[in-house]
Image 1 (tube, protein in one colour):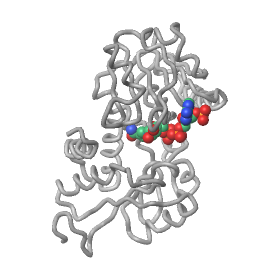
Image 2 (image 1 turned 60 degrees about the vertical axis):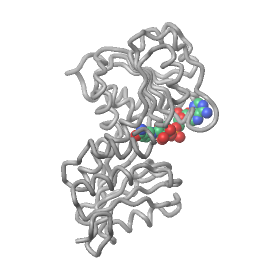
Image 3 (image 1 turned 30 degrees about the vertical axis):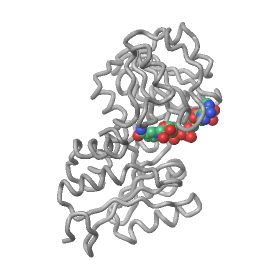
Image 4 (image 1 turned 180 degrees about the horizontal axis):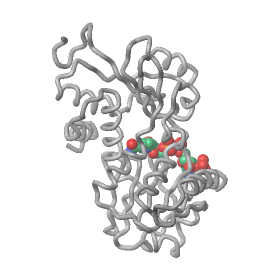
Length: 297
Ligand code: NAP
């Protein structure tokens, strides 16, 4: 067996595939967990362009890899490249976790479960309450599913392109209808970004989630009626950063609770680690490694 931190002839590999991928914090989290457990396994980051995704995925069984995570821009495209899909990957329309099971690729998605775990860890209660989700792109379905599972009564999807919000809302209205009763009555509706300035809607929000890249690079967040939100409202940004994000900073200034996506990232990573390795992950070690990589240790 290789010494801890070294690759040897028996080392089993996991990885993240993305374009770009250099910024990924997943290797830090997973490798810290392997070291803590003394496993002869390693987690790499591979820069894979969309044109090479099919080849890269085909290499997983050939190389005997345990599995890979997928990040931007591969999550949606990979759906069609899996031999098997979990119900959740199908519902979310994206794969973030590919497992090599006896040479066949199984696509799963741990984003919604990761976000739900972080919301529960932060003791947010959504039963019958209003959830405002900003965005209708790759990550927004995971946010919608997480708040549905937490019992949100009214889900308002706000997006720049209303047609995209409509498509997302229709998909989940169908899902809610299929599931039938058993839970409090839940509704989902589509709106434009102007709804974020509506005191009537924002005044009822228990949670506002940013599931867009707004504020990730230059440029701020869309106009939002922060002051109209209830004092107990939670602002949750899927983006994670060293400093409060442009979406969260005004909420913090008003004394609202504000959480960034670092906890979601850790939790989806913990779930992925368990799927890849069939070993209970050291969640605290993965959390500490992420915080250190983010410069927040
Ligand atoms: P994405 O698919 O590129 O997001 C597209 C969405 O953002 C669409 O709704 C789009 O609106 C909207 N949008 C993009 N630029 C905009 C702008 N300038 N003004 C208004 N709306 C804009 O990205 P994603 O995969 O959903 O990811 C969203 C964010 O979540 C990223 O920052 C990502 O890093 C983060 N994320 C975090 C985690 C975690 O574990 N914490 C997991 C997944 C994603 P249109 O429909 O109008 O184009």
